Length: 351
Ligand code: ATP
Image (cartoon, rainbow, N blue to C red; front, side):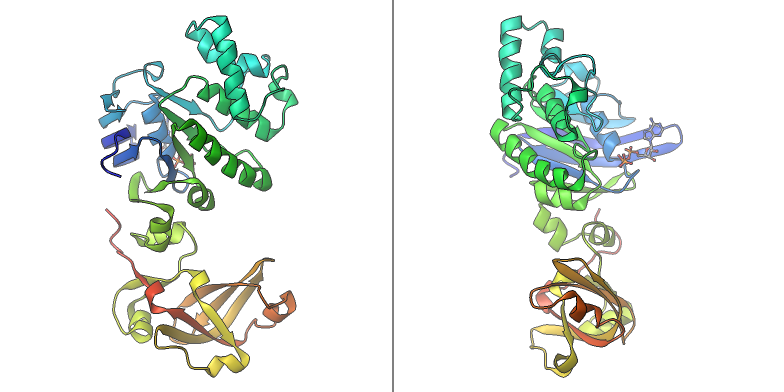
């Protein structure tokens, strides 16, 4: 990966608004053609980083490079990047075609060419035939596509997307996740998007940067970030955190430190299986089920361990019905997981 040219490079970027430090020192390299997510809770600085890359904000310290060029002091229109905003910012009085053509018109691209490119962009987002509609006559998902076409028509090197699917309902959101990814593959532009939704980041991205309090805690592929979280924060924010620490770690795992085990890696043994031997490759712990959350395809068990602490286990409802699993509330169970699924966590943070 590091032989590839960087589409976006941030070096020592800090941004303060008066006494508020929104970005507290960020170094980041996004590669050409990547689908890259900036993931983090509200207020962690991801939108500010996006705006710094777009040029809507200037860093208090540090530099921004796009395609190897220092753009730190340049205005947004001087940068080879376009932004798709969460509210889409479409012109309500213009039809779809005029909305998509707008940027090219400003750049004085001749009419025939801009019309051709706008139609091409609309075809990419599968909106051919909608040219004459106004934004108000479109669904949320269609408006989102118009906003995307309006950015793509400029053929930027980098497309910046601020919570691009935030305004859509869950089902449409899931459809657009797949769609956005396939459009990105088709056009080959670097997509850099902001989200607070970990599932969305895991589903769509080639790599993810996890933000916390104005810093990046970890950068990695979805599998790296999910399976090998670099810090307790990442473990908790990306997926459900099951931390085994201190005296509990010593009793259960025979060693000191902090470890994370993902809920879906934990088996729940109940009834006759409770006293069954677990394999030598597994660790196990007995406890009492504090809560059972039935969610259709899977069930989440919250278990208070006898040695102290609490673990969450997620089981697919392969054989069980809702009645079976709900009956386990307040029952004794044994939890078992393979040792290879215990990951040490750096409690000091990932920096
Ligand atoms: P969200 O998901 O809620 O958009 P975020 O991770 O994108 O959050 P930012 O919008 O980057 O976070 O904000 C980071 C911090 O900087 C917050 O504390 C925010 O209040 C502050 N901040 C952002 N923009 C400004 C501004 N123009 N003036 C003052 N403070 C700001």
